[in-house]
Image 1 (cartoon, one colour):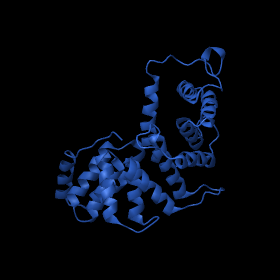
Image 2 (cartoon, rainbow, N blue to C red):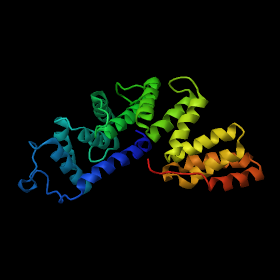
Image 3 (spheres, rainbow, N blue to C red):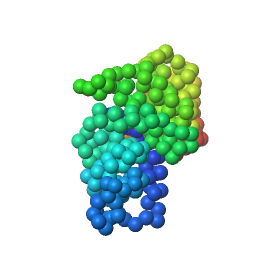
Image 4 (cartoon, rainbow, N blue to C red):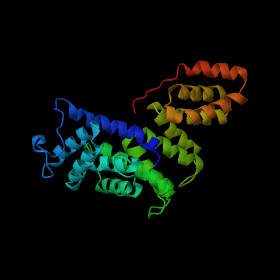
Amino acid sequence: MPRSELLPMKVMVLGLCLSLSCGMATAALAFDPQSGVSKESGPFDLFKFGFFSYKEGRKNDAVEAYRYAAEKGHTGSRWALANMYADGDGVPENDLEAFKIYSDIARAGVEPGSEDTGYFANALIALASYYRRGIPDSPVKVDLNQARQLYFQAASAFGIPEAQFQLARMMLTGEGGNVSVHQAKKWLNRARNNGHAGAMGLFGSILFQEGQTARGLAFMTAALDHCAPKDREWLQAMQEEAFSVASEEDRRTGVALAQNIRFNPDE
């Protein structure tokens, strides 16, 4: 699946996991008597053990611990397992298995303020991505309407910038519903104010096409200055195409304005 769609959310949830490591000793070998952890241990202990095992490169041990914890209903372990299947990380890549686990997380729902909120929102985005492209040779077919609804839920209920960006892209092209440039701009504006470089660049491209040439160039330039390596190619192509048809005055003004555009990379 498109890993770039999930990366920001994975980083956010991983930060939550990392907080668990504060003040804890390094884990021992998986399920040996000295570790104090067995398959009968509580789900949170198994999750912590799986997390430490993964950090230390013992992915087989991490998978085993996560599976036992997942069977006991631990949402974070389900999320970790789904990501490993989606990425082929420590297990053979299996998008259908990942889809099933993400679906279980989504069906379970989440209570307001729950510590599982990050996992739930991540699952919605992952499912939207699968519905957007389908999974070959599986029952999961392309369903753009469902993808758009899932992105909308993650964008509106949880304010996830990546979901806001992907929702806007679907609105611009009419994927899964009507074309709405006005609504797309609204979601892009929210995402770029939360540090999403892709949203900032696409927002600038729309302004450029609407005749706000210098301002559009400014946003595209600022996005290119702050983007992740994975986004550089398409953002640069978009910016260079706009620069090629802009006047010299608009180019100079756009570059100057770009220096004053606020960028918050904390997603």
